[in-house]
Image (tube, rainbow, N blue to C red; front, side):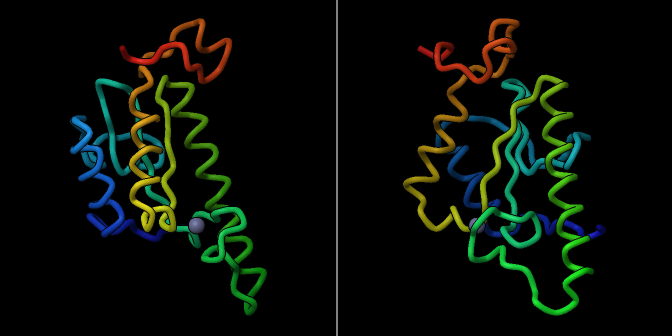
Length: 143
Ligand SMILES: [Zn+2]
């Protein structure tokens, strides 16, 4: 689906300013990575997606409820988005990038958002063999 992501939409600005405040340097979506992540932390090999609840299908979220008219059309469209998001994250993972999705509706609670971003960012970005085996571990916390 060809909906072009608006540059510098509000949620993205908020998240960028938090990430910046936490002391991380990043690029805006100017790396040629799958899914064009909104924030790219090259050194840490981490990316952050800011997803609209409706377009990207945020689970049980109120904002993600689907239109009741043209059901087939919407289901096809939105299911395709979700499938593509999943496959992008898989590809990124295979390339050694860690992804975090921040949902539009999570922007409201900035305290919670801050700790979510902080805990994502403070994990070391490089995926060791150990980590590949055991998944997303806690033991590599930055001291
Ligand atoms: Zn949501």
